[in-house]
Every structure is written in structure tokens, then in C-alpha cells.
Amino acid sequence: MSDLLKKLQDAQKTSKKDLKKNINTNNAFGTLTDDEISYVLALRAKKARISSNQTQSEFSKKAKLSSATTYSNFEQNGRISLINFIKVMRSFGRLDELESLLNETVKEKINKFDTKEKQRVKKVKKL
Image 1 (cartoon, rainbow, N blue to C red):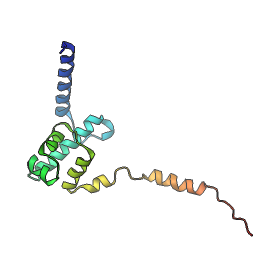
Image 2 (cartoon, rainbow, N blue to C red):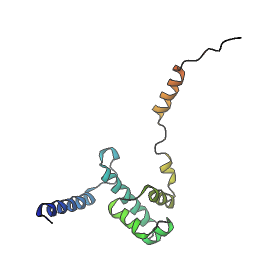
Image 3 (cartoon, rainbow, N blue to C red):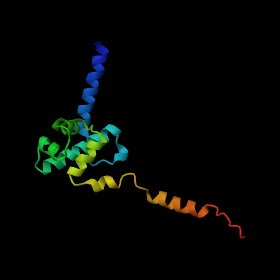
Image 4 (cartoon, rainbow, N blue to C red):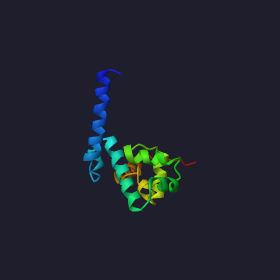
């Protein structure tokens, strides 16, 4: 392995460690990178799991994840499949928080209503 590659890998590891130390779980997501958002979600999940007095292994079984490693990896690096994240949220009893994601916004509903009003109406010919 070249020295440059080794230095790059070391820098990435240090960067991730710094991220974990300095992340604020209350930051608005609009101010965070994608990696930071996934890590914040992992930290919040860890906090919820610990407050429910469950080990990672116990929680993994409750959430019906394929292995305890799946959940452990999520808590450590913020990476998890969408299906497994849904299982985690279901296990916490917080599916309602996912339900509001990607719903039509008020602005979209208004625009849809305005567009309907502006559509032309075909006249029906009388026989």
C-alpha cells in the first residue's frame, strides 16, 4: 500500500472520529451533510434503545433484524437499509414519524388546487 493511500485512509478515520465527537443531535438537518444526518439518526436511535433498557442484541431481536450486527453497525456508523430502518422505527413505536415523510406539502396542495381551477373545460355540444 502506498504511503499516500495510507495517509488518506488515516485522515478519513480521524475525520469520522471527529464527526462522532462533535456532532450535535439537535442540529437542523438542513445544516448537516448526508453522513451527519445518518449519524444523528443513529445516535438518536441509540439513546432511545438505552432509555428502554435494551441491549443491542435484545433490540435487534425485537426489531426482527437479521442479526445484532446489523443494528450495531447502524449505531456505530449510521448505515442501515431503508427496510431495516423501518423495522427499527416500528420497534420503537414511532412509525408515525415516518408517515409524514414525503407527504404533499401545503404549498403543493395549494398549487394543485390553483392548477385545477385554471384547467380548460370542454364544452359539451348539445344535440
